[in-house]
Length: 472
Image: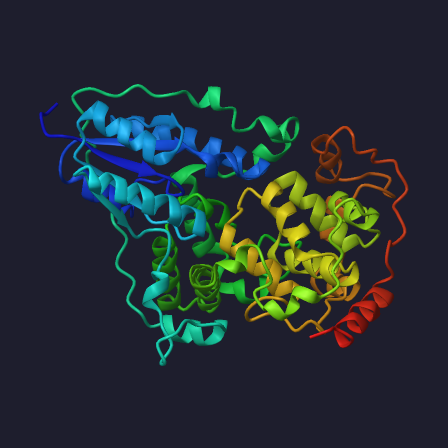
């Protein structure tokens, strides 16, 4: 114990001890009080992301306790909660890791201005990205709008070595009171689906490091090809842990660089995927409309359907479109909280082009169902697929879900894994879908598999006709 005033470390989507600049700086100066605040942004999370956050907070609290520390939970507007904690604890400093979405930036700006006005040392630190969005510029001083030049600009940049976990987290003389995670009921909306999804979660910093190590040892060499084969376990799945900061992008980057040095050819492709995430944040920072409007504003007049009550939207959400690749992917999402990246492109293209439904409908559904939900990556992925975004796939490139299945799931292993209807002995994974879905969905394993709601060829032709006759 010490009379040195404590530093509050405000955790958000950075639930780890290692490579945490704010925590490292705070720990070097005296007692540390870790804090997590349930504010309006937390309450606004979708069902699965909020549930996954609750699991992550529990795991992180246990990691802090193993260090002789604890996680203080409080609810309310962040600026009010932090000001109250400063008064209660006598803290002279508040540190946090930066966030980049517009709502977080607005919140954090108010917090910093208020605390500094009260004489508090309020500092934000890097940690969620490899490169701060404002530090990567074109030769003309602007921001990048196309991925490949962005990759070329950053691939040779220095990424500082990852920080080790603090060897000690000094406790304050007195701990402030906190709320309980159980009372927050962050997983309430998952209902019976929580038990189905939970086995697919790899939770916390230690699990994330293990996941990274296994991927680098066993999978990264062939990543460039196996990452598209939907029936194979060929991807890192680290998006789940990156989304809550249970692992840092720098830790992933340096592991990938070591793999390149070891002669593993797929490692560069892995680094490019990390940089695609950076690109999403770069664009969100410079053009926040990426999150809620067509990035290419000339698409505002495109005739997408916007009514979520439509029969085809319901069929898409329920995995009942009659297109096996699409339906398998939508069911994988509901059972595991994740979806293979190749499958994400297919279901997004199908919704926005074959069904001519607005990308916002799909983006919102993913926001509610993904345990690896990330605001920038989700928005960029949907706009890329729809054709309305930066560096987008051309609208006339309409993925054929039938030929895509033939190419990336040639033996139908992925489809068999997730679709039960029409099979004498459905797989356990296919059956688990019916344990996860709302009881109000009138679906059962013994149902007949539906006919396609839209013929793939006719859907493509309708999409191309709409594109060619667009009013812009």
